[in-house]
Image 1 (cartoon, rainbow, N blue to C red):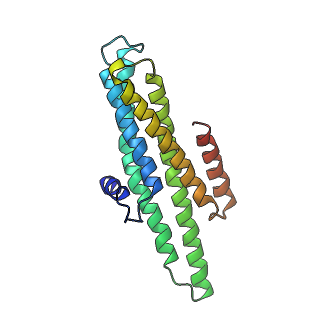
Image 2: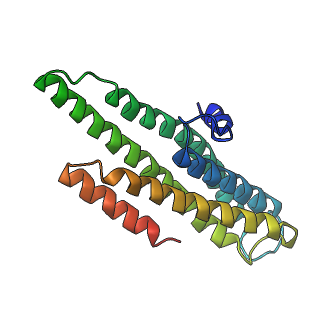
Length: 187
């Protein structure tokens, strides 16, 4: 699903893959660049122990994969909302079921970017560790990583917030608002 999300987010005619997937993909690209910069800094004296570069690279590679999967999860969450709106609403029972499924879909549509935002936040932390402590020949790659991950993080927050107005459950709403506030402080 993650490769499909990548292709779809580049297609302006496809309305199933939007900003949430794009934010996750930006984070994934940033993670890949951070891992590359860490790998290019191995076995050199750039300020961190060689083992720390290996740890950063491994964690960033893992986050890259999680964010790629998160882009696909975002598509699936949007599909839940879309499917719920298509449910019948002829009787009181149907309306109740439809409304419950719509809210469940919006909760999922907010939780996915919340998870992806946490991942982007960690990519930002890893990238920041490399600033001034990495191969000088990869400074531009690190700058691109920082720009992408900040865009991804902002996009994740925006995608949490856009879904909040459709969530009535006070516990879910409070939790998701807190995550958005926490993530917003990262950029």
